[in-house]
Amino acid sequence: MSRSYYIAGNWKMHKTRSESAELARALVDQLKDGKHTYLAAPSFTSLETVGAIVKGTNIRLGAQDCACEEQGAHTGEVSVLQLKDLGVQTIILGHSERRHTYKEDDALINKKVKLALQYGFEVILCIGELLEEREAGKVEAVCETQTVKGLEGVTAAEMANVVIAYEPVWAIGTGKTATPEDAEAVHAFVRKVLARLYGAELAEKVLIQYGGSVKPENAAQLMAKENIDGALVGGASLKPETFVPIAKFV
Ligand code: PGA
Figure 1 (cartoon, rainbow, N blue to C red):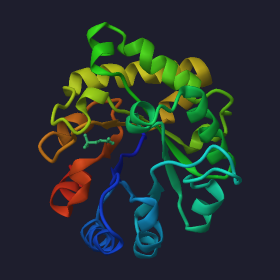
Figure 2: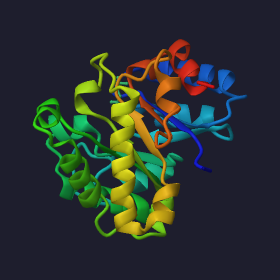
Figure 3: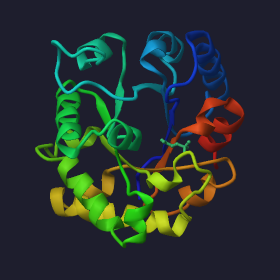
C-alpha cells in the first residue's frame, strides 16, 4: 500500500499571533526530519504569521473553514480569494464544531468543498457521528451521507486534492478515543463508499485521517491500522511536546 501518512494540527480558536509564531517555530525545528506530511491550521488571524514561518518547510498551511462564496456581503466570513492571498494550501471543511455549533449542513459544506477545490486548495472533509447516532447504530448511515453529500459534484480529478477526516464527535476534546478497531471499521467502510463513487483504484489512494483525542499514547496503534492514514489533532496539537510525538509516531 502506497498511501502516505498525513498528520494535521487544528489549533481551533487558540493562540495570539505571537503564541502561534512560537508554536510554528518549534514545529518547524522539531519536525524538520519528520517522514510524513504535516499541516498547521491556526486561526485566520495567525495565518500570515504562521505562513511566513512554515513556508518552504515540510509543514503545510491550513485554514479551519472558508465562506461558500468568493466575495460579497458576508459579514464575518473569510473567502477562498483571501486565503489564497495568504498562501493557504489546505482548508478544513465540515468540522463537527461547524456542523453542530454553527449548524452547517451538508449542502453548505458541499458548496464550500467545491469552491475550495475549484481554487486549487486541498480540502480536508470532516465527517463523523454523534454519540446518540452511534448508540442508535447509525454510524455507517451518518458517515455515508456526510461523505456522499459532501462530495456531490466533485470530480475524480479533484479527488486528488481531497482528504477525509473521520472524527467521531463523542471523541473530540473528550479524552475518549475510538478504539483502533472501531476507527478502522469506519475507515474501511468510508473507503468502500469512495470506491462506489469513484472506483476502487481511486478510493485506495484517498487519505483518511482519524480525529478525536489523538495523543502520543494512542497515535501509533491507530496509525497501524490499514485504512488509517494520519490524524487530525486538536488539543494535542497546541504544544510541541504532544504534537511532535504524534507526528513522529514511528
Ligand atoms: P481533539 O480534536 O484532538 O481535541 O479531540 C480533534 C478535532 O476536533 O479535530
